[in-house]
Image 1 (cartoon, one colour):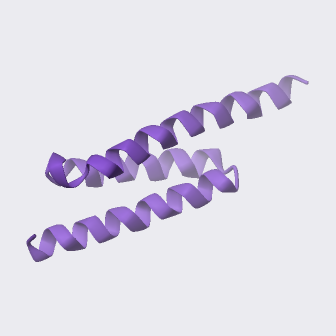
Image 2 (cartoon, rainbow, N blue to C red; image 1 turned 180 degrees about the vertical axis):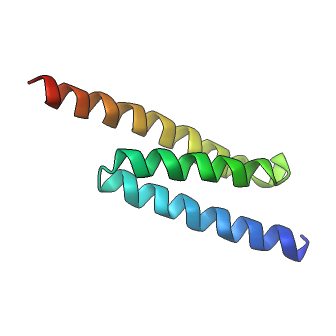
Length: 77
């Protein structure tokens, strides 16, 4: 794997870690921003190198939607 791709994958993994932390701390706005930025990074790399990261981003999307519903439900109570 070329050096640039390894560096890009390392940066993507760091972004995914930040996304997981934002979700754990229920920071909805930050999680959305980090997920969007991570998708931009994924799009720059070949698909065969980012299969696992794409799966993680889809799982994060589901978690963000669930958190948004939870937060919205608390506001209405």
